[in-house]
Length: 315
Figure (cartoon, rainbow, N blue to C red):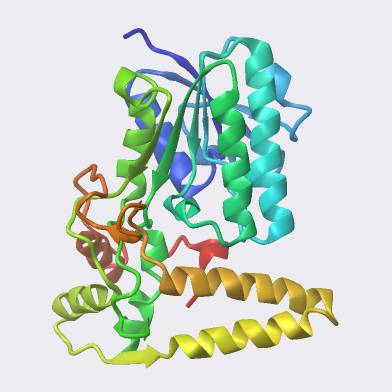
């Protein structure tokens, strides 16, 4: 297939950068629309266009064959989510349709299967718009990212306990690396089987629980890893208290929203949901790539990989 002209949105994030690399490795021409203050050096080999949404979109869409959107709200808070996960993507889609763009690939999230939070509802609202649009589309719903499971590596390296919620098995997942996810996103533009489909995707299995993560770190450090269990009831209590106090203070209301997001990720598996059994299904969760979480932990312990969670940090 001939190289395509791609407009990449959200390119300066860790997944966006990996996606840019994968697209360029596939021979495609990549244009990245970034904020005026963003660091263009993060996207070597790409044509960088600086501008604000939505004003910069029409010009950026000129001559573009496909859009890949890695846009996502930084915190998941309601106002941020509806502004980015929904409105910014919606503006990009309208500009793409007006420009005659043929394909739009969206990086979404597997957690929208059980939408309990505003950012999940915002993502679903845009997913529905995309599916109804007059162009080809692909919606990619990855499981957990390596970076989201890496916050406790420095803790354990310092001899501190590994924190788990409940019994340490609640949040099984098949984590996928940024590089593997970038390659998968790039394939959606050239593989007809990935066209006009919602694609859940994880990294190579088997599914991993928090206790499995602690065991990895024990093997890598050669030292016993202490486990500290945090009762789920404590999370419920914190959310309840902040929700009640949020009726009196906008600041506490915002903290309550973030606490709800933290509780979700502390209690929900990131695996394919099976409506027939009303349960998450590890075996049915698709796998892609070769990168393993344990190798990522080893690289972190050697100081070769930084903690890139940013606003997604919980611990």
